[in-house]
Image (tube, rainbow over all chains, first blue to last red; front, side, top):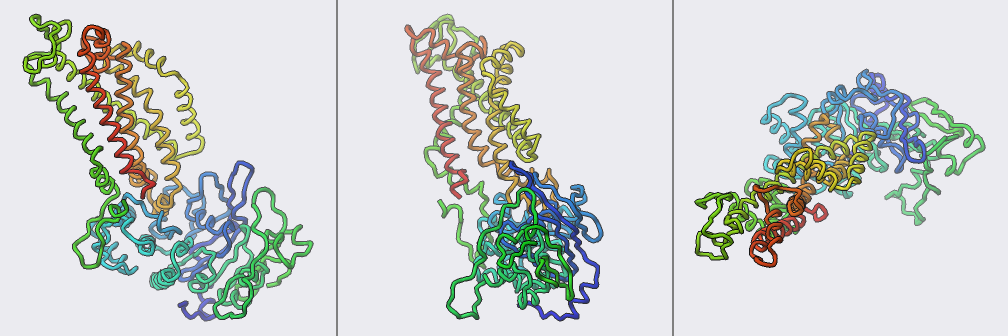
Length: 336
Length: 299
């Protein structure tokens, strides 16, 4: 269950200096038929102890924000803007600097537990690799720490299982191994790219609770990327709604679920089936599909699908306006 | 096959699990394949005979026995398969020729694979312009008829076993390079490679720990086929007189000698031929077994 959050709590956190600061991040990919803008001028801050959710549909650029921050953008991608971690610029930084930060104070949980572990390495070697490389631990120390972490993510018989190969684990257990791997160095900042998408619903809930407990214990800053509003509701303090590589709305999680302001956020909420809604109607959807992001973009990216579109929407890109209570929205019709 | 992969069922509190590596699982599958396993034993026997057998003879390959020139097959004499027209023992010459054929085959394939894999993995992992340049070079080399290349290298290096070896490697490293590049390209985008980079591993550590072990399964299967190809190429070149020169010998040059006497004495052709054919069959079955055991699609 989500922790109880008060406004005072939130305000106190916002007063603290952010651990991760993203300013005007833009990611372009060079394709055969021109440039594709996956992320378009995204800015946000994350503070210690805060869980930020980034929600959006497939192709909205949400994973690319994490990849850019981790320095994992594909070879045909170009990043511009600024990403600072504890005041240090890490966007397009030298590999030496990144290698030092990655895996020691910043780590990442990947989407697919089936492909995120090397099938030819014992789990113990994959887990201790990072500890030995970054903290100069002896192998025995590293193994002890790894076993302890596996026990924390509730893998039964961890000391025995640690010497198995990935194919000898189930999907849920592999995802726990991935979480253990990401938390092993006690990172100050954790990225999670759809951490539960590949798992079935009952395992999802377990993993999310586990993750919630662990990150609060470490007091880490967390950025979760997902298309699942359930994950956002369960885990996050603050949410960014992304569409077409741009931030549509930013709000505290309760505010967003209570009263979404941007037409896209409203559509997203309406398209989510609710257990407490027993009126028999068809599931609402947002008509159309996200447009290709190739070439020059004019106006609001959501305009072609928006029910409340006005002429100005296709001519002029709405700026992200910040208002009271940490709310922000990018829409000509919404005054935050 | 899945029961082999999964290993013994693991229950908490049972005996300590050791973990079944994918390589060991593949080896288990291989050793259950009777034809492939048997072929490997036969090949080992041939190799043992070729490298150990000549020590048992009281004379060398060049020692002519003038009392027994062109002696016929007599399994209980000192020349069990007779002698050639110079009085040299045929069996001994076939065994010593086998040393050349087998070692050129295995060492040549190994060298071609090492060069090809290093080249292809570098090209595929780093990608971009480097990849383009390296692979177009391979395409150009593919375009050169390999006979010209072999004749040229033979002229430069002299007609020695070494020259033959070099020309074979120069021609045959291209395909492993292309295969390894394909593997590296597909592995570069795998999540565990990203995960390793996210964990702060350096490029070198990633290539060594993640890229190489994961491409080995394909490379192992291809190498077994390459050994076969190298042995055939060597024999073919020697048969044409481009390879090993007298007095040194190999199966290919022995077959050439035998073919010259085809009408009078078939025995000179049949003995080296049967050694070559049995070896090639064994290698084929081994390659087949390895492919079944290592096929990544099966897992």
